Image (cartoon, rainbow, N blue to C red; front, side, top):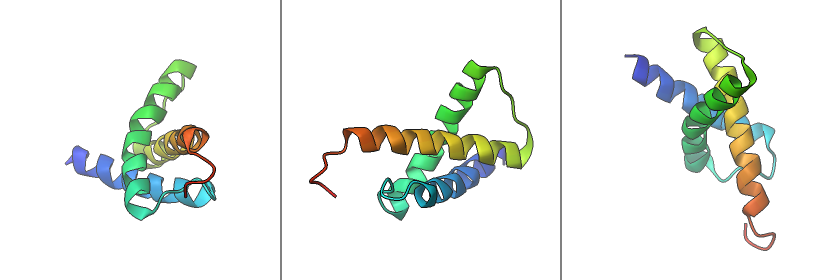
Length: 83
């Protein structure tokens, strides 16, 4: 059951990150995948910083920050002419 919660939180985080990163989003489906990957990335970054979150809200914040970081990294490598 926890796995389903992780996916749902990742989907919401990807959606929120796509809205926050105006111009950095890549459409709903890709942003949802980015949110799931961002959850892993956010957990890794928070672990490096010695931060720990608990509960659904903590997981959502971690995933959203990870998704924002991932969208930012991808936007760096995105060619300016290709949208």
